[in-house]
Image 1 (spheres, rainbow, N blue to C red):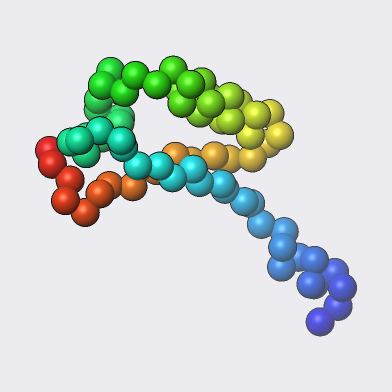
Image 2 (cartoon, rainbow, N blue to C red):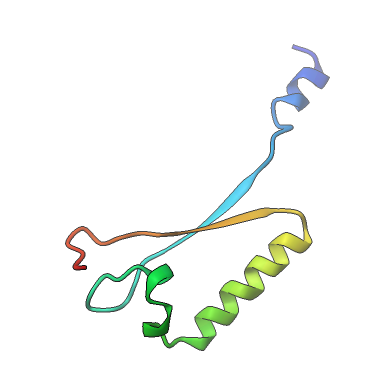
Length: 72
């Protein structure tokens, strides 16, 4: 394998994922219950992180990790 072929192995689009879990007693989906989450610091941090990533041309996805015994 040539050096160029080796470099091409890493020439892929990278997507970063920020995974989180809810701190609420009921494991509500954040997307549907954003009003129940009152941490302005967490909201600001997520917005700032997302903006910084986009400014540097990186994709950032968010994913909520549901607890095993989640209640709806």
